[in-house]
Image 1: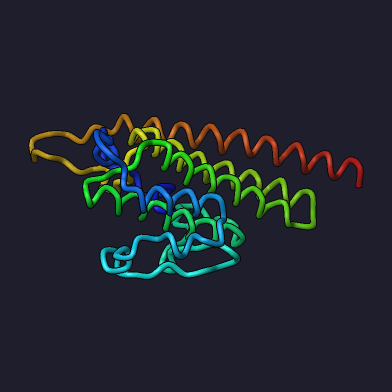
Image 2 (image 1 turned 90 degrees about the horizontal axis):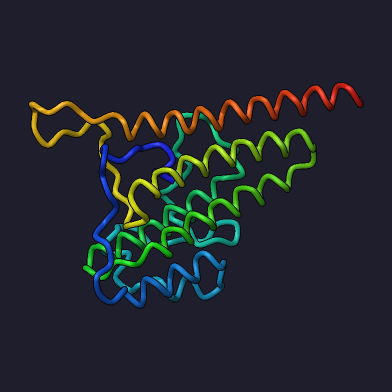
Length: 208
């Protein structure tokens, strides 16, 4: 889930917007991945492993990038790990289509992101304690917000990961406004989350 933590270069867009036919194999694979289909393994393009250096593996009932994970400046719940790895695989399938000049439309990245959101929130609901579930849900909101902001900035094209301080000309100053907006958005979510957690804690003490 690299998009949650490694911001793209300021002003960077996603991969090339689709102008022709989408790659059918990649499109079928994405649909199977986000629907948790048992056919997902067989629908991964045959040359995917050669192009990306790994073969997808199963984890907790999901097909995932075994080398992926929840990269984040804050510690995310361990329950998110399989969802993050599945999200990483989904992004690599989008990159696969981009590499062979048959990129998928914005629906694909939206679907992969939505699956991540659904899975991490579902993972939180498996916790026994109400307060723990609420705290986990807040972390899920923060994680998904970071992913969603980055996808919107890249206009739902193929994911691009670049240095946020990258410059095309040494004389140019890096444009930090996109990063600033992202940070402000995450700060707002974090602040709201802190208020919610504090309210839940007070409620719990009151009725304990």
